[in-house]
Length: 304
Ligand SMILES: NC(=O)c1ccc[n+]([C@@H]2O[C@H](COP(=O)([O-])OP(=O)(O)OC[C@H]3O[C@@H](n4cnc5c(N)ncnc54)[C@H](OP(=O)(O)O)[C@@H]3O)[C@@H](O)[C@H]2O)c1
Image 1 (cartoon, rainbow, N blue to C red):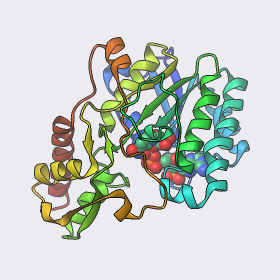
Image 2 (image 1 turned 90 degrees about the vertical axis):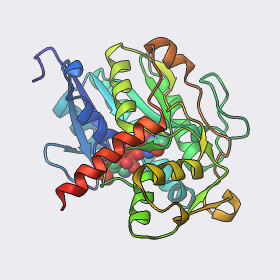
Image 3 (image 1 turned 45 degrees about the vertical axis):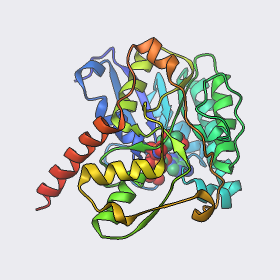
């Protein structure tokens, strides 16, 4: 039970992969001084507040209701290819929406914590450090970079860049869950073999974000897992740990994949800053996937 001195945290986009993990991880005893409330947009959930980034009145209502000291912005249009073909909508939600949230933050004295991505880089020479100059090559990347700059202009604003989140979450569209759905149904899945990145175990990321909040950190942080692998390698590691057929994974070049938005190929983020300040790295693929597999097995048993 949260104490009356607990800090109120409003998690925007709590129906998503990371927002949901933040609410679950915050139940751990070490975070009892944080009291989290979540928002939804299209997928209503009990006890969550409605908030649409395209509707400033709904944002202000959620802030007035909760009076949060901190707001974590996980809500966004996150489908990279969808953003590429709907640039106006992407800007409206991912940039204008963040502007509206920041207005409410100022009105209520709320510290904004914003989730960004390695897609702010062009992927020509990653992994990148916090001080490297961004150069996004997709609409999604451009909108995220614009929004993160706005957040960093706020006196106590915190921006966390991350990538390739994974956890066991049947409601999620992460790469891992898409791969599990395909492979368990014996469907082939094309996977890029030239997009390098750092898979990041979502509950671990959520815990570190809450820790940064607890330590009142501000500025820019890169938070990703320690392993730097092409997406196809990540897929083969998943298949091995889950005992699924690796022959269903079809490695392809990004050019052959024909994705609508350009991808940063040699992306990746250097995490030295957070490791130095918190004294530990994020968990690696092997450990993260073992946790995911456990959740998956328990869920399969429960479903009979
Ligand atoms: N997943 C990754 O690998 C990854 C990598 C790098 C950065 N990030 C960043 O991390 C953050 C969280 O990502 P995620 O994977 O958790 O996202 P996600 O699973 O795609 O969830 C997106 C969330 O945003 C909400 N949302 C969508 N449109 C909205 C709107 N117009 N107004 C208000 N809320 C809206 C959704 O609510 P409903 O479902 O209720 O509509 C959902 O809760 C995002 O900012 C993303 O850019 C994610």
